[in-house]
Amino acid sequence: ETGVTQSPTHLIKTRGQQVTLRCSSQSGHNTVSWYQQALGQGPQFIFQYYREEENGRGNFPPRFSGLQFPNYSSELNVNALELDDSALYLCASSLAGYTEAFFGQGTRLTVV
Amino acid sequence: AQTVTQSQPEMSVQEAETVTLSCTYDTSENNYYLFWYKQPPSRQMILVIRQEAYKQQNATENRFSVNFQKAAKSFSLKISDSQLGDTAMYFCASISQGGSEKLVFGKGTKLTVNP
Image (cartoon, rainbow over the protein chains, first blue to last red):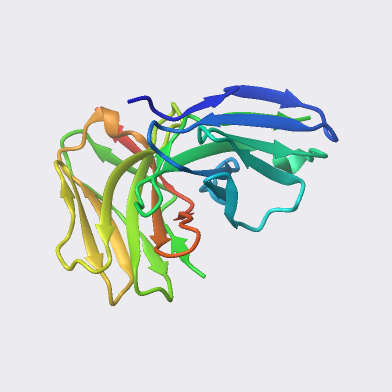
């Protein structure tokens, strides 16, 4: 049974650019959630995908978008990067109906 | 809307001693779960313990136990026989069942275990 893996681990982008972060969910899990964790803060829910459809969204602007693929892996896309987008982005996978979520090690995004 | 509050930004404890981390929450849901997650410097969130709100019995996992006071909306974590490897950020979180099952986290408590 493989765990949740995220890539890349670190990324530096320039303000205004676009970025794509990737997540492979744990084997057998059909739900993926993305969280943003700013420095010194707890994670904030961005959105969740279930069977390739968005299944809930937090208070984030439309320039944050996502995809889930048939194998349940997922991408988080952020357009028009802002300095405040600098954060640790965490992916969590779970099985719908079960509340336990398993997290990846995150992608540290720095916007300069 | 759910909210989770952790009022202790930092705590320290001597190795082998006991420490309690505090958490309060607010929710209008009837069915919800509460969690404590550990985030070491490796950054990966690791589930420490979970509590179903409908269960009155406090959850226990080896050296970790909770004191769940539903009426007071309080959910504290007790770590017994603290070990150096317990040094990490600890986050209290809640989730409600039904609809988007998003976790709502507190701001965390940085725990340092001293030798």
